[in-house]
Length: 233
Image 1 (tube, rainbow, N blue to C red):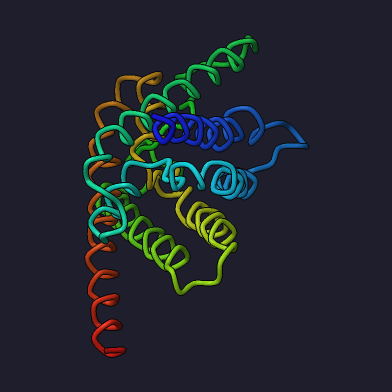
Image 2: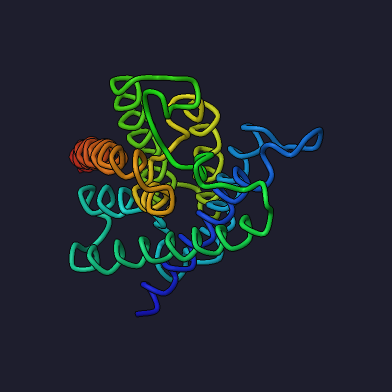
């Protein structure tokens, strides 16, 4: 249960910090942090979350990460349902908190997007389905490769959180214009449930693409790991 609680609060922090920066701070006149600031906010929430919750749960905060680590042989499948449920609940709790805060401003409306992910007319720069699909698969694939490599027993100890946080920042810098960046079904679901309509209709892509990218990364890393073990033996 302590693992599930850690995943709940870690995902809560990720969604509140990342999506909160997009909703509350990105567009503030003159002092707004912009999309680069939002990218940094997502990276910082993961970096800090890894060190805070990593010793307890491994700091997944993302159903795609949990699935990718399981495929890669680094996570027990029996924990998957509990982790994913905790991540979804943590994300929803964060979105609820963010909604309460944002609704204190009369100008706020979820129809403005509420940091939801989308493609086509709901992409920040109008990118279509194909672009969104490729972007989310590739970005999640690379994210998982970094996670699997940075947390490997042969990697330098103590630096995984920095590598993972910086990678998520880079991913957002690349892909915010395309999909508003998901690579995380829990983050996408939490915002889509509040926006409703188009956000829920397009939510399938932000489950399918990140999970597909994570599965491919898990298989690739497992092959590399097996090849390395054979060479050493």
